[in-house]
Image (cartoon, rainbow, N blue to C red; front, side):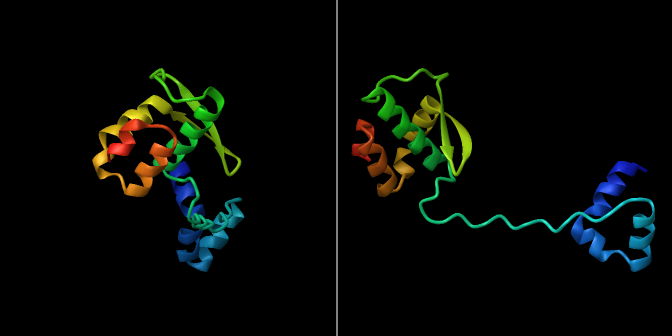
Length: 125
C-alpha cells in the first residue's frame, strides 16, 4: 500500500467527512489532519478575459499598441499579458493562425474585435 497516497486521499475534506469519528481520531493521533474544504472558483464576470480568444485579443491589442500596425509576426513571438494580476504568455502568431483558420466559426462580435485591431481577413467573415 502506498502510504503517501493513503494519507493524501484521507486528508481531502470530502473523504475526511466520510470517515467514522474513530477513524478521524486515529489519524489525528498520528499527526494527520484534514485539509480545509476546497474553495469554489469564483465565476468570471462578463468581459473577463478568461478564454484563449480573449487572451489572444488582449495580447494582439497590447502588441499593436507597442509596435503600430499589425504586420508579420514571428511564429516564435510570445506576448506576455497581465490579466487580474496574473501573467499569461500568448504565442501571438499561433493564435492568429488558428483564429484565421477558424474564422468561419467565429461570432460576428469576435470578428468585429479582430477587424478593429486591423486584421483585414476579419472583415470578410
